[in-house]
Structure formats: structure tokens, C-alpha cells
Length: 241
Image (cartoon, rainbow, N blue to C red; front, side):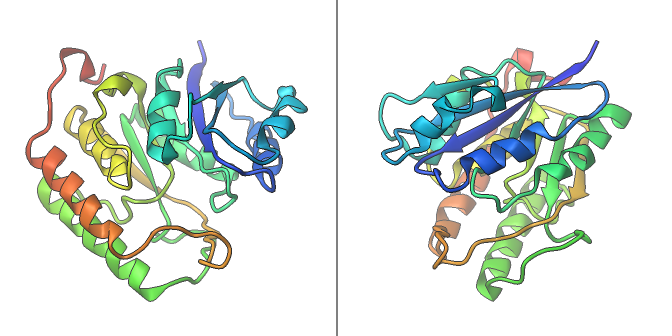
């Protein structure tokens, strides 16, 4: 029986990259793994919906949010439609390379991992040199997460987070902003036992190219780490099998 992985792709006005991204995702063939490619169109006002409609062979399904909800809202909406054994987040802006899926799935296929993080800081094949203060902020939030959760992650705010879908129910998620990623990782880690990290490549965008995160977002992220790390909620069905 194959392992089913939902690749969840939030998209808002990504007409320039969505088809190339989906083509790259479809090119990933891993023995024993079936991919459910789930695109969440978050109220796009450009040609993203038309591009998706013209290429139905590139995805399993598209779900539409009732209005523009932001990335966090789109993620929560999409999780309600996911059916895979695992969920893997994929941005649609080509910063992350789907050829790394094979790396991410090694700990699952070989060691029955519950959570796998992709790290841009642990000997990646390549990574684009970017902003010094972004790295400082990343180190700060990663250190905070590790202190709270007694872990040794190196890059908790990488997009590539792979986790067992049954660890988290979409309706229980509280946050829709920048802190949501920390909420999901905190809940998944607190409800499971086997956690891995693998190196991934990264082609980050500059602000001129559309990057949105700012220094003040670190405050929201650290709040989420403290809130869900110090006071994690428990679920009977959330334990790893």
C-alpha cells in the first residue's frame, strides 16, 4: 500500500509561477508514494484561476476560499480538504524546489518519522544569499522554539514542513497570520515522537521580487511559539501511530 502525501499549495495572484511550479511538482516520482496535489486559490484576481482551469492534469483538485483570506486562512481552508497520510506545504513562488521531496520523505519511509523539517541552513545543495537580519531573526525564533520544546532544529521557518495529517485538525487552528506556521509545528511536535530535519535548496526572493516578511513579524512568531509550546492542547487522536 502506498503512502499518500497531500502537497498543499496556497496561491494568490501567482499567474507567473503557478504552472511552472505544478509542472515541477508533477515531475516528482517516488516509489511507494502517491501525491495528492491540492491547490488553494485564495481569491486570485489575476489569471491564476484561468491558468489552473487550462491545466487540470497538473493537480488533483483546486479548492477556492470564499474570499481572500491570506496565506494562513488559505492553509486552514485547504487542510479541511486534505486526505493524505501526511501534509507537505509548498509555496507557489518557486523559492523552494520540489526535487527536495525525495529528501524530505526519506525519514518517513525509512524511520517512520512523524514530522520532517526542511532546513536551508544545514549543508543545502545551494541557497541564495539574502538578508543578514532575516538570518538573525530566523536564528532567534528557532532558538526560542528549541528552548521551549527541547529540540535541535536549525530552521523552523522553512516552508517545507511535512507532518502526519492526523496530528492536527484544521478547525482547531487559531492563527492565520505569520504565527500559524509556529502553531502547526508546535502542535505536531508536542503530539508526536519522531522528528527529523533534512537539507533543502532555497532560491529566496528579494523585496523587489515580492518578499513580504518583515522584522516585526518575529514578534508574532515568538508569541505563537510561547503560546502553543508552553500550553499545547492535547487530542486523543493526535498521537502518532
